[in-house]
Length: 270
Image 1 (cartoon, helix red, strand yellow):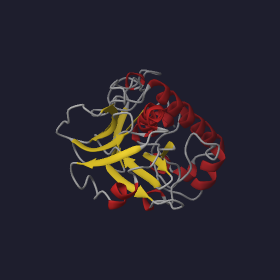
Image 2 (cartoon, one colour; image 1 turned 180 degrees about the horizontal axis):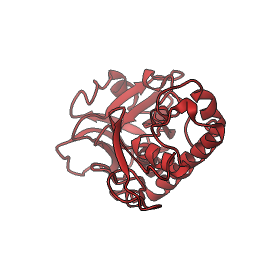
Image 3 (cartoon, helix red, strand yellow; image 1 turned 180 degrees about the vertical axis):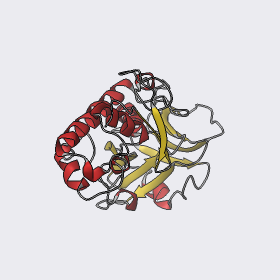
Image 4 (cartoon, helix red, strand yellow; image 1 turned 60 degrees about the vertical axis):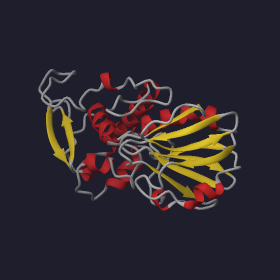
């Protein structure tokens, strides 16, 4: 699934083409993706100008005076701004026809993505109860330390909890814990304030760098301009179980934590 850097890369790629554009029509080739597409999308988007393209966690929001289209890429979704005459492919499920002869096209082979609606002045149920953005000032080591007290779950599970902080998925949790030198199986409540300061700094640094590099090259993800991300070749632990640690050359361990594959170095992470 595309993680925060992939979604942010998509947002940054789309924003210059969408902000200020007027939606002329919504062309649906099916009525549902992961969930039914609500009728408000077709009722309110046509004629509305896109004022901003925002990201909240792994969701994209197209803000208009009438409300916001709420998009999630799922496992394999992509969004492209294309000439309206571009031939439609098999999995091109939705077009937002824009002024100037362009369309925003949502392609999703697995249909795990979504197109939903958020009314003005409201917060969609999927966005309620979320933690702070990891690159915001609200997220730091003191915040993690305070929220972790008394928690027996592993620090990796804690870090991936969207109620604690949004958008730190499996790849970036593993990489951040390695950079901070923290064993992913350590109980969250047994990590010190000092080490949480290092972990928060690692999360911010790694996510910011991954965004700069275009995200990781996942199996199905490519950025809005069609180019793959380039962060994958720089991963230290994710996907490298059984291989030598790039820091100490010892064999990296691999285990399932919360139904997700976790890789760490038993020497560098304590």
